[in-house]
Image 1 (cartoon, rainbow, N blue to C red):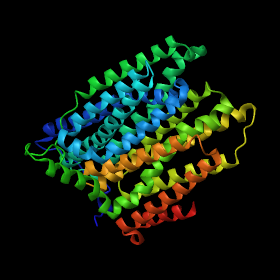
Image 2 (image 1 turned 90 degrees about the vertical axis):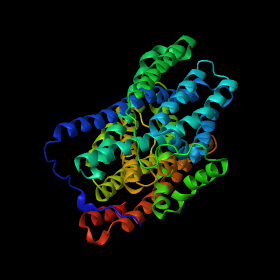
Image 3 (image 1 turned 135 degrees about the vertical axis):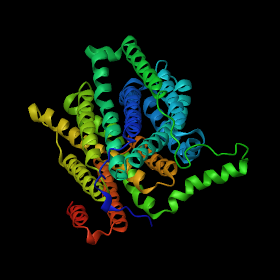
Image 4 (image 1 turned 180 degrees about the horizontal axis):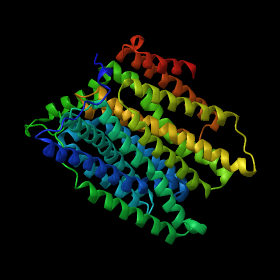
Length: 452
């Protein structure tokens, strides 16, 4: 079993020498790529995230919005099984570029929402989403490793820092996108064709800018990232490669122990989108308050992502951060079980406070999962990130399909059970990877798990 050495948690000093000018240029290139990737994803997902939040409101006929999202995440789950092979063949830069086309098509389909436009767009977006996210994880990890190697820095620290910047920028899409929706659809414009058309057109322009920005990314070549050297490999070789990319990560005990946390990360995101806004926010603040609460959620998600990324240096720090995030979300779920709507200032404050706490937890989980996978699975980054999206998207699909049939209390009970299972799996992983009982910092973090 691979291990992560905490002894290298501190960055090694950078010695300025004859090659310092060249190294400085290399550093600029690495950080520039992180800035470009983060900004491009912000432009793309501020549009998609806000549109997804409005999907069930805009397309209510025959539950077309809800069903389209369910189809999307089922497709996402299926195509994530082959995404690692596609990304390995195409290269991570080309994968993220191609992935943007699915989001563009989905928004365009909403301009004329029918079963004949929404279902094909949802199916294709499932494929596009699988490769853009596996490509993103592979590209960002490769970039962090290049910087750590060039500057003799601790790899875990650099991976954590780069993931913090990316997820901080990404999480702010909820804040920016919902403010744009609020501005364009104010005064009831959301019920008019002209209002929604204008909003979707703005979103398409934002996505186009994000796609153009991605063209300026540097090409990355990491272990196994680029396609097979022999372009004449046959169908049999392709199938073997596919089976290997799907099965091999599942033979690793570390991945099996992370999967409950991955699944929980998808469940808690879908809970916010499908249950929290409908059952908690709308009754208290009205439909118009959904955008405001999601903006609060996104703002705290972004701030926490950046902070958590900068605090990440190795397994000990990841254990502390994840345990704190899970504990905070557990408090929110217990609060919801006993929650009853109130009037006045508290009636407004409580849903916003819950949104902030859920956003903090989401920021923690996203940054730490990506950093953890980047640190532990160096030899099959694409396969590991594919597993992340398989289990994450599958759990999101489950929530969308269950939403119409179960109560809020039942869903919260499921969330709490999933959280406990995720915490237990992560605890076992921590104990197995680290020499837990010889690390006081890690032991303190483990005790925190038991307390909550």
